[in-house]
Length: 165
Length: 433
Image (cartoon, rainbow over all chains, first blue to last red; front, side, top):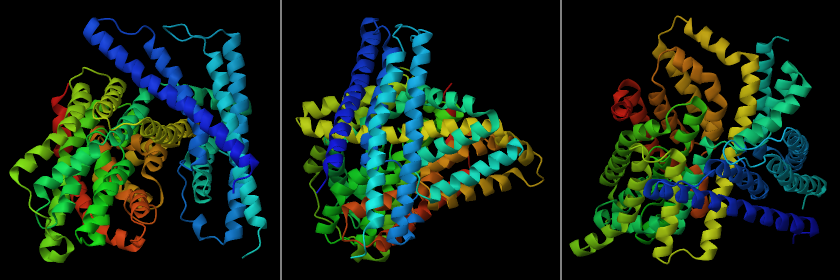
């Protein structure tokens, strides 16, 4: 039975994923509207390219934690699979810790990137949409990633401590 | 340590992280970040990491990836795959091995609207394997055929591997898609010939199903109209220059959704499920590309690709011998690594070599896809085999792998043919300006 932390992670990832799916569907609808507008009425959606780029950032970053929770990120299994249970659990824990460190750095640097973008008042090329909020959003989307990696780390530690049945 | 030595150490570290089961995308980010920091300093590396991620995820050219992946996901949710199989079954189901031939044809049809091998194998496996079991087909043939025919997903356009190859090498996605058509048709025919030969030698492998009347055949054929329409609209529109690749994918995804709604096949639940599935796959591919870009920056400052290209260019062996070595590396690499990850890691290193040796980049793209097809069905990391194992848990893994070997032979035959007759892949794109 999943514990409180697992349930919290599932809820957070589910919410983030729903936002990601909404952004992906928006990308499809926007492009279809843009193409139909341009081909049929010679009136493309203004700034559609900019909106696509930013919607993609939201879609990918907010779906990342869900993909991680579903273990969709590809890894090479054939060596680790051959290790004894405890050694495998220790290895998985070390890998989760390293990945947690990586994504903590990524979140921190994306936040710093957002501050830079805000200071320099960077906007998109055609629709002049400010970029900084999207860098902040991407940084925020890394938080569920870190939570899932922490969950994997704790799970591995528990597995390593568990006595053989 | 010289930049080249640091680069080599980085490649070794990357392989070690792969073996330790660090996800491919994250391993490339770790090594790319660490290596760049070692060669250029920590502050530039800390600036590079968010910049690369932000630029990758906001890249408009890369938005083609989620669009085509979502097109396949929504096409499945709209029931297009079931109707494709029903049509193929109506025409060839009555032949010896007919259900397996129908599966190959349906996979080829679904590959024309889906760009992933695993998605094609999973989609058709769920439909075809229970049918083949019901008619007493040999499970080795049935599972092997679905796993192998699923690989058509990345050869017949649209193809995620062609898209990623095009993005990494700055080649035309449209030309690569066109280049996949003739090899895709040839491979479909080779798979069908393989099934026919196997069933001719051992009729008990695939007993003929019940015959279907002409009226039933024609009625079932109507089921492929919408798949054909989607292909013509999305891929045809792309090839004719009506749409950019991203627009073609979005039109295809929108079209698949519209078909599902018109057919009343798409419920809210299946729509959300397909969206989640498609987005999770897209996310995985986008993170691999982001990792490859970070790693690629490290490789660039280490100067390894350029040094290697110069070194190989001065080697005495014939250029075909060097190409042979590259092919063997991809073939062996496919045994141990996911195909997408393999090309993302190796292309920045091998592509300059291939260009230096004067090979056609479009032809090389087709060769890479064929090698990836082998990679997804060969042990121990045969993604399609695991997908099929998930659908048919009662069939032992070794039997699925055994069932694949005749089809692997067909892919090898086509690869060798295209190696020596490149025109098979380059003729059609050569006609496009």
